[in-house]
Amino acid sequence: MKKNKGLLAESLHILVLFNLGVAQTLYEVLGKYGDLFASHRSRPIDIIALVFIFSAALPGFLIFVEWGAGLFSERLKKSLHSVWMASLKRPARISVMLLRDAVSSSF
Image: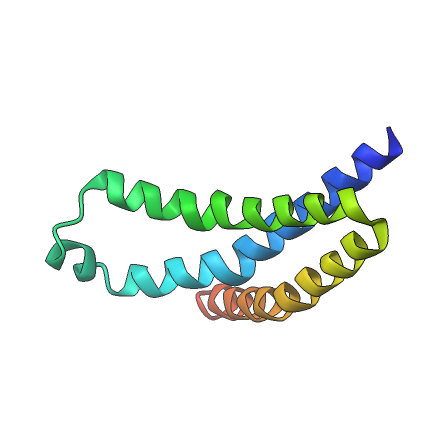
């Protein structure tokens, strides 16, 4: 049971940090240039697919790779998790700081 809790917690770390650091930043940029979708005649399903890919599929791939590494070696899995965390923490921190500044400037 404890191993499953660890896997769940590690998966949530990756999911949240990826969405804060990578997906949210991309959505913010795409939101400013919404005419890009109109000029490419994007259908609603295209936008839904883009959101799914960046919010679920890409972090899911990272989780799957980490899980696969854990089948070979727990040490490899922990090392890979450390690499994911180090890579995702900085963009997530910047994204949160920008969001905090935007909220505080609106009051």
